[in-house]
Image (cartoon, rainbow, N blue to C red):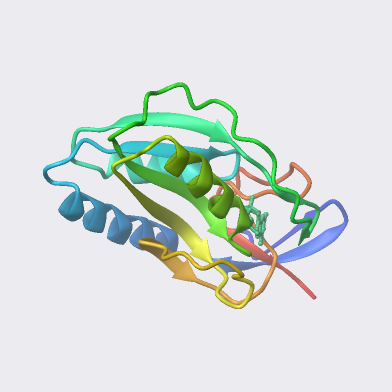
Length: 179
Ligand code: 5GP
């Protein structure tokens, strides 16, 4: 594992190693397997950041399921700009389905708030939220997050799907900005 990486002239240090991430992903998978025993959930994977989490999570899911990949981005650079865009890519009929939103990180919570509004308009049976990381200090929404891998302080992080200006999504460990 690289202890430090430089991305776009900024220095990042290792924060959460891959083995710790894997244990968090397994815990979420176990909870979903338990809760969804008699359901066929539709996982709605929020691109781009959740691709690596979703890939590892879905390998650990034992219940029958469907997947849908969507885009809805509200983020630029290192600070949330709070402009939430529209949902692209949801082609499945979701009425009466049990839906699980799969996010990489919930920061202010506005992205998922917007998704919940869109999904609820389409009369889903049930919506659950799974996020690998959550920043409780930054959270400014009022919904319950059903599955949280890890709560973290208000750092900017990258790796394991999360980028800095499009770079470093492929790193297997999570790094945080050296302030
Ligand atoms: P929210 O709408 O909850 O404020 O932001 C959610 C989105 O912002 C995430 O899906 C992610 O793309 C991005 N984001 C939030 N915090 C971070 C972070 O620390 N690092 C990176 N790379 N992206 C983040």
